[in-house]
Image (cartoon, rainbow, N blue to C red):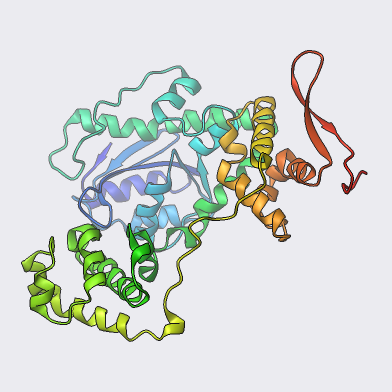
Length: 394
């Protein structure tokens, strides 16, 4: 079903009003705009599958009311960007959420399994992805494009059912719930803080303190301007030009126009706002100058992270899931840093939910000198208890 009228949308929502689960997907374009340009919304439930055209039917209230329901499970595959779009339309963070890519990772199907691959694994069917580079905001859409889009919702239902059965079979339902919490947290879908965007500008570490303060103001202005224009920040002012403005701190429009790579048209449009941002930066008191994070980071003792990472690899093979799902190298580094600095580990990522029992407690035993690795008689690497001076077991 291809929904192009308000009446068709009402009829679709009526057919879905009692659904307990909705399979959802979106098609969008985001090459030159700050926000996604929505081209289609696909939705499926038992016996119903439709593609809603938001360009033909911009008033989506009946559908948004449907997905806002807290007793309706919203199922996605790699749904982060879909949720960015739908949360913005709905004006709230949708929940509850189920993501088949995340669930598939916990079954050992791959850390970022594609939709085509998970469909093949779950159903044995091969779906074609020949419309990947379609401009979904261009009309009219061909029947091939519509069918392609519908498949992304239609096949999501059997994928979800298969994944759910496997999670129950391997007793991993409790694991998966915690993995969806970030997708239900509204804080993870807020617009980026404009006043932190200066940290993303390359080569900023050579700036003088006053220039760094000015760069913070300039980058914040640029981010807000990009949101207002709905364009990429670099389309307002490129990083290189922004950095040069912060370095030279021009006080007049002609000096601003002389900066290489800064378009004269932008001087006329935004020159005064840029000069005001520079003045705000120059007026920042010394104690309020931004401090850059330590570039070097925490240096751990030789071999510690490598040992823990080896254990992560061993445990992942035992559990038949990707090592990065258990613990990424950055998370291992952060755990060692917290341990070295005697911080409370209870709130650390590797001590939350199922990871605590699967890996966190044993990683701490390694750090405490209570566990080690050895090669057994069969040539397999295994964990063993050890008794070192100063360890809890000594």
